[in-house]
Length: 492
Image (cartoon, rainbow, N blue to C red; front, side):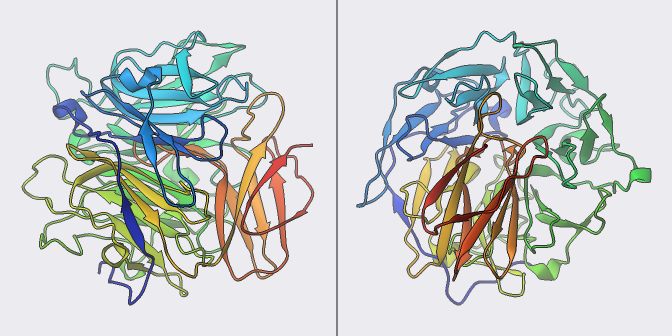
């Protein structure tokens, strides 16, 4: 079964954007990431879209009450070519977001400066010369810099490639204020997404990797690495269950309020939502197809061949208190066994926890070849908007104009010292009727992600309380917050 249409649903309208496309040959069939972040402190997120063989593009946000508006920026990274993906985080803890650019070539880390400027970063990072398509980051203990994971695709130097020629991945750990040599995470199975997560909410952050089965062909699988103290893969004896799919993207979210995060993975064919049936073991199981999350074939466009999912993100687009799912889709290039007319999915969570397709009625059913994307409030009105990078097609942005949405809050975390954005923290929102649990992470999606306040849809609401479990495990006090605004919470 695949998702069926909603009788009524959210509403989006297209936004005019400056021209930009994700271009290139074989090395840019994958990738096409989008980073979303506020680099000038005006609370309006900018977009950094990679361009593959074409230059990347920085779009500065000039939105106001009349609508969403972006203009081209002229910052240094806008000239970078060979880029497959991009993520942002405050690496040096100076309060300004920095930019990690994945490339078919040497990866880059650029230091953020006021006014959305970026410059080379002298922190000992060796970008190597790989075909990088995945990234995630976390802080381990009180280290001055974050631990970085880079996922690499096919080894271009292997004369037997591309099949059965997957490259190894790399883990970078800091030595004081600089990075040491990278540590290989082997075997690698052509990673297309990775995510550091404390999946059992126990204080230990592990690395989940989604891999492309088309290139490893046999012997490979999805991976879960225990990274500390010495990296190793989780085993079947520990509860890990083998999963094999054409993995493209990862996202995690506690959808049902049981305190355990579900994991959504995109692929060629069916998209997989997994739940965990053990509090302490990584025993992830596929949910039934009847949940409406598989999105196996296009719901419009007349092409009945299997879909190809790339970026995936959770977010409550109606602010009804139930998280929905955005899946960006598009054929790899001209693969004859996969749909060519393959619209993006907007799966709306129903009161019973199942999902129903709303991409067509919402107005986002683009037939461009999608890659990276984002669900983010681009104009500050409390409704999540959508942005998508397309291969050999224009960047698309849709403004959320859904009428009569519910209440919402945004939670923006800060702490002094290292890790200023509190990556690894857990946020609890008590609505009176239920408690919503959210982990702050960097990574996942496909080749790009957002560094923004955490958005919570609430539906109808009364008094609200929020509590933060800060990195390291220290619990803050419950504090009252007001709905329909972003609240900054600073660690005492």
